[in-house]
Each structure stands twice: as C-alpha cells, then as structure tokens.
Image 1 (tube, rainbow, N blue to C red):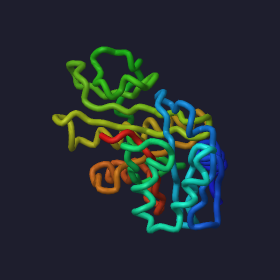
Image 2 (cartoon, one colour):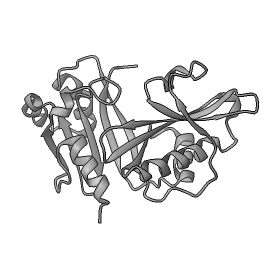
Image 3 (cartoon, rainbow, N blue to C red):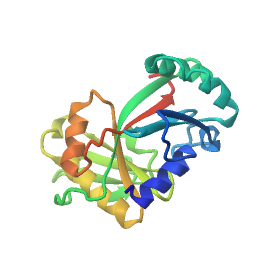
Length: 220
C-alpha cells in the first residue's frame, strides 16, 4: 500500500495519482505556477510500474495527448514544444523515496543558505545541512526542495576534495530523518547515468523501486 504522504504529494505535484493506464495526461495549475525555486516546471511526469501520470498546463492537455501515439522517446523530444517551451529539453530521472533512512551517524549542521561561505548552488534553499572540516571549510551539503507539505526532495553535493568519505550518504540520511519528522516523505531524484548519486541514495536508504520521473527544463 502506498504511503499516505507520498500519495498526497504525487496528487499535489501532478494533479492526479494513481493511474491504471500506461500514460495518463492531466492538466494542472501547478505547471504554470512558480515551483519551490521560483521557476516554472511546464511538464512533469512520474512513472511507476503500474503506469505514468504526465502533468501539463491545462490548456496544453489536448496537444500533448496527440503525442501519446508516438514512440516514447519521440514523445519526450516533442514535449517541450507541445507545452509551449520550444528550445527546452525533457530530462529523465530515477525517482526514489525513503520511509526508513539508513541509521548512519549525523555528519552536518543546519545553517542558513545565505551563509557567504557556501557554494552558489545551495543559495536557493532556505536552510541547508552542511558538513565542514576542522577549519570550517565547506565539504558537502544538502538542500531541501519543499514541493508541498507532503513531499520534500533532497539535493546533495560534495566538493571534489571531500568525495569518497561517505559524507553525502550520511547527510542525505540525516536530512531524510528531518523531513520525516516534519511529517513529509523525503524523495531523491538523479540522472539514470549518475552511478555515484545512485550509490549515495541506496546507502542512505532510498532503494530503487523502478520509478522514474521526466521533467521539461531549460536546456543546459
């Protein structure tokens, strides 16, 4: 049975969950409103073994449904233009969540993301979990994307000099415990080819369940 928090998170994020169809296209106002970082996510999908829900702006549902007869890779390539964002790209990700983070020892402290000693990628978050060395130098950090009251996505990064010490997995597990304490479910997304991120997720208690996510983002 799907965790209640995860169910409500997916309904809030996508506009509908679950589906018994291979692909269900739904319209949601969330696709035209700013997300956690102030940016718009004009198309977002989550696919589980039982089917996928693809969330798009309400006025683009018809155009996207016309694509569903195409091969899946062709659909993903045509999706940005169909939702009105030509020049953007559709990026896949492995979608993970945890209800029981690995009981690893804490590795960091919660600080304000405004701290000028932190790397720029952490700035959009409110407060962040940071590991430092004995001299106070930044080693690794985790930010929380609070998509809604039910689901919070974790994002982790480690400085090149600090990799291989197990800091990322400890920080992710520590942050996941906080999310659960706040009454939400922690999620973790990574690119399918990112083996290092996959190892961190597994070690922190975010198993692969065969779920994937697809989102339309500005091309990098």
